[in-house]
Image (cartoon, rainbow, N blue to C red):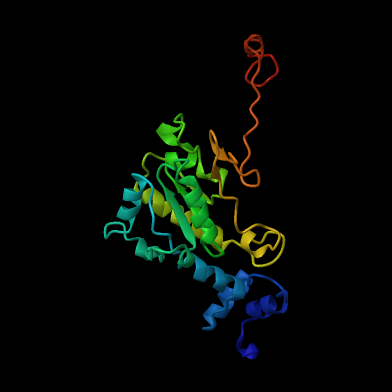
Length: 241
């Protein structure tokens, strides 16, 4: 068969590294012209995961109605292989946090996430799930589910339309497709040192304990200048306006 290859394919095959994670594109193009299709274990593994995302079947508030609409005939989430909403976290690999996360519901959401097998992913759908939304100042609302579990894709909006959720699925598929099975850049579930389960908050005297998971989320550092210094300091911090 090697005698039937073109000189260009012969050169690409000769220069192919034995431990490369992806097949050289030049070699793939030349071999495809000969009726030979090539792939790698990594590409095949990632293709299977991107094409079979099974979301967990639960919703928290009005964003869940938009999530349900995404699976209907007009938008047809089945085109992306993600229409199989599973009733059990043991059978799901994607959690869509759709709606307001109250502090009463937060422990249950984290517990469901811990029960999902690896690899697992999270989509934070809507302003409420991201930061508390219009209820952010409420004493009973969690200001973002990413305070306790890692989030892969954020969808802003109140509520986001089904097209936004489909875009989030496509973004997650691109992220999964680019993951490496080996090396320093391999995903979390392939790193033995990374946790698979996270602390479940409990009800304290005045708030959830702990109020956040430091391994997942830390408050951003905000530098507030004194009132008299604001008028003297320009936008570039040099004192010039």
